[in-house]
Amino acid sequence: MHYNKTNTKTNKPSMNPLNFLWSGYNAAVAAAAQKCQQQLFAERKTKNFTHQLEAKTSSECIMGNKQVRQHLETAQKTGILKISLQRLQEFPPQLKNYPNVLKTLDLSENRFERLPDELGHFTLVKHLNLSGNKLIELPDVIGELTKLEVLLVMNNYLTKIPKTLSNCNNLKTVNLTNNQIKEFPTMLCGLKHLDVLDLSRNKITIVPAEVGTLYMTELNLNQNQISTLSEEIAACPKLKVLRLEENCLQANAFTPRILKESKICNLSVDGNLFNSKQFTDLEGYEVYMERYTAVKKKMF
Image (cartoon, rainbow, N blue to C red; front, side):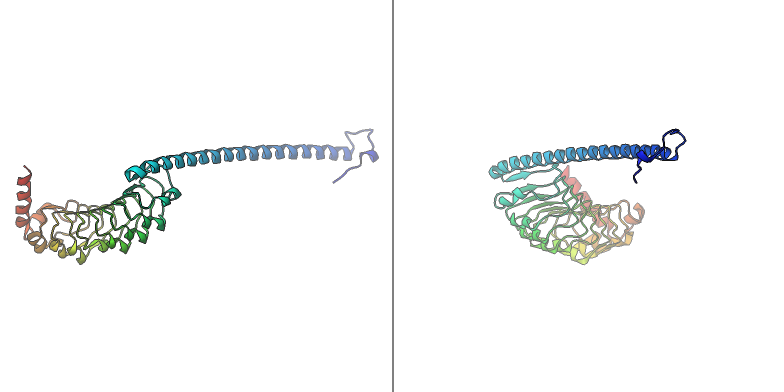
């Protein structure tokens, strides 16, 4: 909109409607300009903050990469790489150049949600720690780590375990506590060197018959949702310690075969759907207690 002031009478500007409109127009323009300036200032402030944040993040990444390089230089000599607590979200690309060096790889307490297939190239790794991340699955290539002896994946979000883990015949210790696993990982059954398996604080409901082929000495299933326990667990040739606290088991889940014929000498069952008297009244309880007492005497 445009007004031609030269054609406007100005004897009584206060009463002239065109002057009044022009004054209102100027005020509106001034208000709009001020608002525009405020918006522009806010945008600049936001951009500056974003720029500073990006610069800070970039600086942190550079610092993280520098630390990774330092650890890698040490790992070339020791075969041990520990890069925990670095807030890493992706597999460090530098690691891909050292597949035949590492024997211990510690990536715990970072922010990984997934791991790349390149993990399968680290065939010399014996100790792998992935605890305290955000992993929802393990890659199938983990089965290519055939020298793996210790696998630690506590405090993640795993719902299942890859079947390829059955190829890791040298596994001795597997700790998967505090995940979201719903089915007992039967692919671990038959691993003759597996000594300790910790599946506590998951969502397992059934201990299947395949458990009878486990060769471990200790099995921790505390704080799951187990309501069914296969008596084939009595067939485990080396099982000494069985932890089943805070589950959903009835007393009759512990059959005479389990109590009499197994080699279990430390059975933890507190926090299930029965009281201590119901348990001590079970057939075979006295036989179990003989094993328990014999082991205790050896300790003192």
